[in-house]
Image (cartoon, rainbow over all chains, first blue to last red):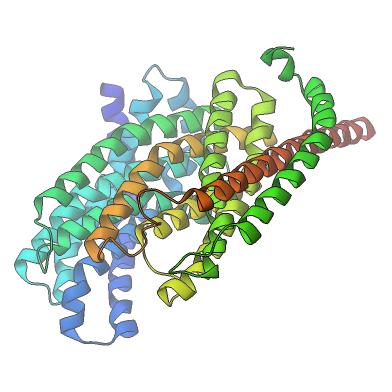
Length: 222
Length: 243
């Protein structure tokens, strides 16, 4: 357990001190949200209506940004071999790394989303709904993303292929995340059902992500 | 000859060499019967007219699009559990075929959709699921091409294939839910609960024909892949000897 905690703390510390993680992700998120009005026009009514969708798309893309470095840096400096050889189950080590990654890239996006919601003229209740669905949904994105990051760990041209592998798998999370957030604006369905399904998807990703990513790492590195 | 004998690549090659001519003939024959039945015998739909003929190509392609992923998933288990090179080869040979069948399914579907719905594409649940399946196939192809070493690529693709096999039903469910949320569900309803036998029989024959086509192409592609790997090994050995 202490090994996992050490891994978690180490990853968080690396992400915070090295830079390039959370601030860049949030900056990317901000830029995506800024670009949308240039494409659609500054009509606040329209932006308010599609605001949750824009925020979800921005967060989805931003959370993918740093994913290809999740295992690649450890692979390059050799610490991934140490993790593989340690007595800690690789699945748990992957999960710890994913949690650290989410804390340093996903959580800042969740925190930033209400502020960006102001740009889209979201009311407090939809803004809260977006933040809540992102809080539940972005861990799923990170955990699904670990599979892509693990598959691409030994590739030198990683980043784009990770996105190509992962984005189709994130569709259910996007569908139910946006659906739950949209119920706060105009919903043919109540908030409960899509939100609980989103929670379910996140729980599934907690299982599939680390197991598949650990298998990919074992097979990729031998 | 048991299953274990088949696992030997040389045995497999000789079997494939013997089976392929017969399979080609059988495929051509069943296609001839099926196309004759579908295009000349089967009646036009009372609503859709002659465009219903597209169904005889479209539906078998959709079946095969799903079958190919199933074949790839079984092969992926073979790769990961038994580490068998032949499973790698089977998975690799099935990927482009599945992509092609899915692509044909999408193209024929949109050609059918144009006269029926007035648009080449509508964001219907079924269409969207097939589009996502197509994207997944492309991702698999991309991964095959990015990793140079064939057996490492096979294991990476096997994991992606199995993750996809778990996720595809979830994606299908999500997309269906999403589609019913956004529009009335009755855009695309194929026929009544039962299809008339005059249409069903040609459809099933075409299904068998496409299945045979898949088996033939898959076997041929597996043979080519085995030979390609032998050539690669020989070249590597040659390069090492020369160095």
